[in-house]
Structures are given as C-alpha cells and as structure tokens.
Length: 185
Image (cartoon, rainbow, N blue to C red; front, side, top):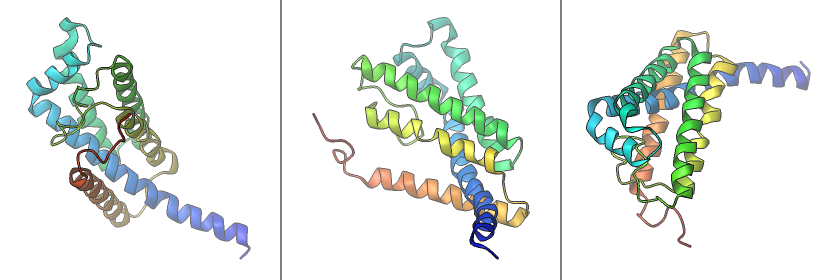
C-alpha cells in the first residue's frame, strides 16, 4: 500500500469518528443551552432584552424560538438526524450569537451576561467570548461534511466522548481564576 492510499484510508477512518466527537460536543452544548433557555425563560428574556437588538414586541417569541432551535439542533446532532442541516443551522446560530456579542462589545456594554449556558451567568461579554463563540462554527459544520461513522456502536461512543469533552471544558472554565481569562487593558 502506498503512502497516499494509507493516508486516504486513515482519513476515511478518522474523519467520521472526529465528526461524531464534534457532533456529541456541539449537540450537548446546544441541547443544554436550549433547555436552559426554555426552562428559565424569564432570565433568558432579560438577557435577550439587555442586548438591545430585538424589538420589545418580538422579545417573547424570539426567546422561545432561540431556545427551541437550540434544543432541536442539539437533538438532531446527537441523534444523527439530518446532520448536515443541523450542522449548518448550528454554525449559523453561533455566527449570529458572535455578531450579537460583538455589537454589544463595540457599544462598550461588556457588563452583560453572554446568555450561553446554565451555570455561566457570570460570564460577561468580551472579545474573547466573541472569538470562542465564533470558533464553535467550524466544529458544528464538520459532522455534516465528513459524515458520522456507519457503525452504530462507534457513533454512540464517539457522541458520548464528545459530550464528555464538552463537560470537561466547562468544568475547566469554572476552575479558572476570575481574572485569568483575559488580560486587562
């Protein structure tokens, strides 16, 4: 077997597993965020209103819609249903969230909660938060582009591992000292 053929074989084996890991992580992230927004609608409504990007009469429907869309996209990624569409939707949502944050950072309104996940109410807007949110778009796209593993057991193991990686990342973010995230200017 030539080196090129070995690399192609490796890519065909690794890409779906990597895609499943990412689908697990992004899927759990969206599912957790969506359910949290739907369960504590008043808190999310306040966060959404504070961004000053949605007209007041549309705040209620927008809050429900964002929570529902996140929940549905997360479920689709975790369930392996229409993964390409779910990945595109998730990437678009992350870009929309990053742009919303960027507008408020440019307005100097960094005291706002990012509204990202339960337990991160203390997370404030910053260029770092904008970058982190924007960096979620490519991992959301990969599952739809590379496809998930054909073997159901491998798919579910990879999804579970991706969810565990997300949980570890969130735990690590809580363990960082408050001032360690970004240097002050």
